[in-house]
Image (cartoon, rainbow, N blue to C red; front, top):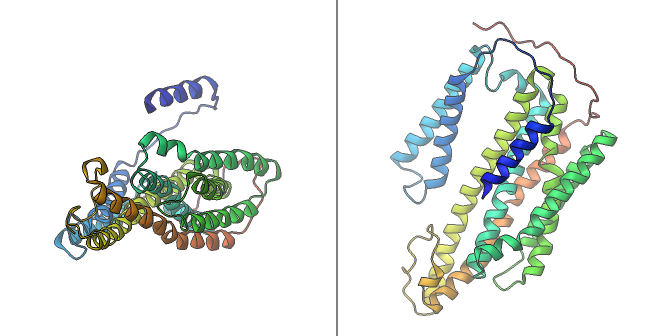
Length: 339
């Protein structure tokens, strides 16, 4: 279903985007791309599978963590030596970009994990179909789109952005607190109202963090700065989904075991809680216990994400606000000649 949308976007870009074309000799950093992606994948696989497929303190953990750290360390050395690095180390001399990277990681965790957790809440906590669960998440997506488009125009006109990012973090914080209060029997209307501030806050922050990085980066590094922040945001989202998913699975295992024992049912009916159960295949008593467990554990996971929003807010407060520039100019870099 996504292929027609992607094809339409490609056609629109091809027909409407007009950029000056220049030619120059380029050097593609294949080694850096391979090492960075390999190191990140090792760490993400470890976060996703540790505690389930293998133990946190196991040989698999040692291989994945050690391999990931080693690959990333080699990648750093490579990035200092190649002529056109995938992620230029000079970018991290800029305090603003470093703060943007931290904020993007934290906000990315919330942005990517919230829809996943909401789908589990509606489908497994309240027994709704996937289609209805998707429709019930419209307040989140709609609020995010509205805030991003509207505030983007305001920032473009005024050149001021910090107040909106701070407000966005406050809205996300308030929304997560409200989502943390829902339960297995909360009506979709109330859940939708709790989604709105989260969507508005994410719309205020998630794209404008990249705008700040672009505003501080020299023209020669504009693409690298944008891609770095987006990559870290996606990495934060992937990590957040894995970590919060593990927390939910652990909590569901405890809640399900307690509920089954209280009803005199077999405690081992659902395994370790990491696999999504088929509620239709379970008897009504077991399905009721599982729904209650998901309806309780998922809201608790929203509360677990609050410290990340606090970190993002503090980091944004530390960024010195400078008006958006109206022109771009090529600035010389201070990197030494490649060896």
